[in-house]
Image (tube, rainbow, N blue to C red; front, side, top):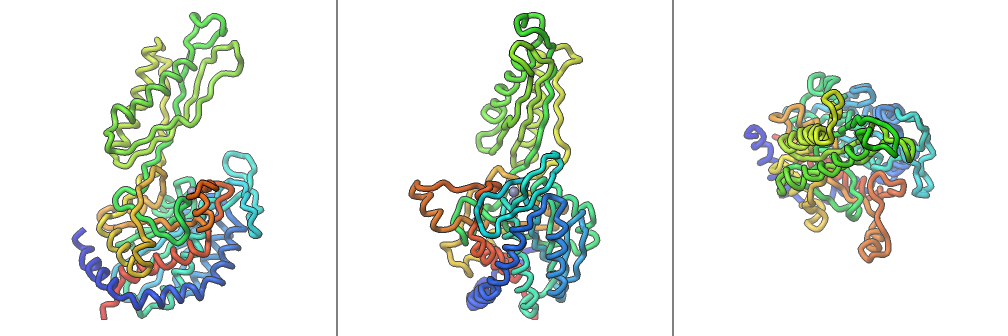
Length: 440
Ligand SMILES: [Zn+2]
Ligand SMILES: [Zn+2]
């Protein structure tokens, strides 16, 4: 913590120079027509997780032209671009590249017509329904500004294009492929995500825990099957699994602290094939959300204990206890270092004005951006902030009760991309300039 303080002090000093702000805003505005062309291209050509070949190639080429030293294929399809510019801290900026298996229904002229076959085997449309196309375009916008302003910063800039955020595996893949050993390890990591609940061009941030631990749990509940008319000769797994589902509700309401957010949702329950047959198995799929490691452990241990306890209560023999599978790869919670977050957001307030930057509640969604801090918690300070994407007229209608807002991942999610990109780019450049002040 202490070793970052001199940089933070210097960073705070920079925020007292608002003249900068107008210039940067104008320079980004001048880049917008070309950036929007790139955006429409990326939007029309989304690719699924770890399949971002065209996207990576296209953007790697752009970064090379800007003077970055570019390495492709880091963590399968990831791209690392480095620009060294004298002594100083290392700042990492990140954008994610993947689209989703969603059939686009926005009606936009440049809507995606792409199809693909994901791991599930079911061919589907592909769409940038999470707005990662706005992230990538803002990333290029930021790279252009930082490359053109090398006299305004000093240090090492690492800009990464991450694959497979949607399946929570891309950040880890890049780290496992040597992101912090083959390339300069960052002192600071910064990213943004578009937001579907507030107006385009607004910036939202949550100091501390911002997004949750995300765990997936599968429970197989054996029963002893038989005729539906003779239940006394069976052990009904539908009744047993139902008891488990109900008892799981007490984990959050009775065991977890009311002050520590947690979620246990049974999203899938499958059993049986016919009216009059008692099945010999039920299957549950559960998503578990938490912030702290302790809370995560309480929930996961509790799920195993409840499954076993209910099976014993139902009279199941020891060799037919429920099998609880906790997926090994999970998305850890995302932590925004509070002091660091406030410093960067103070810088952004100076540029955008108080009205456009607000603290917002943290959420129980997940983001694998968390991995970049988790891989070196004592060395890396990290921040992910939100940039509102809802078109103002739609937002006003929703406020008046005349429209509902599509969420991220909706086939109707059509952000005001121009505002998201301009604001996201300015936010990232602002952070980088604050964190890497010239020392002349
Ligand atoms: Zn998403
Ligand atoms: Zn996303």
